Length: 207
Image (tube, rainbow, N blue to C red; front, top):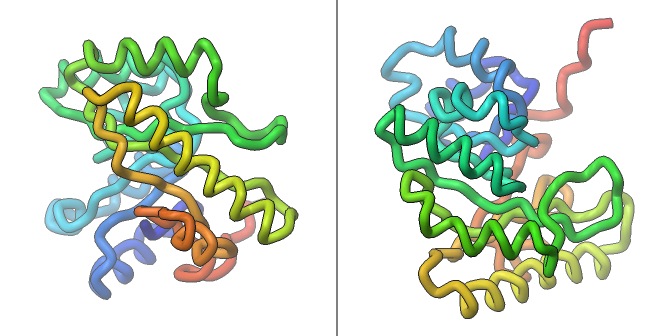
């Protein structure tokens, strides 16, 4: 996945011309502005997923804009997405975001939490969502061994959840970014999210 957040639509177009077709965006509003500048054939050549935190009140707009939501982190959000997908006649691919560190800024479902258990039990009834797997972000500023242990923990959790919820397809493991994707691949990642290594440093926000 080419993470194009904060980069202009022109960068996405150039990347697509070079053969990259799956993109990750962080904010609904930001991609809404970008998509308005893309021609229909350019949009048709891309699949764009939301990888940032999604507020429930933006679920309907997210379903309109994106081809997948890779940051599902609650049952209420899942229900909002399911309703919006039904209205849009879509089957929306989703990944469950799992929080495997104590960093307060990170969002996601905690393993073995009641919230995760309840979501997994209810997901088969949300027929307009297509669950495809799990996503996590490793902690920042830690050793390679700690990073790799985080990725390994997600794979182990996926295997446990897949055995306990055989009606769900959890084959995707989205983990690894520009600085640690090699470690993620070694631990079984099926989707790495690479931004800086492809597009360079993120543009500075206007002051």
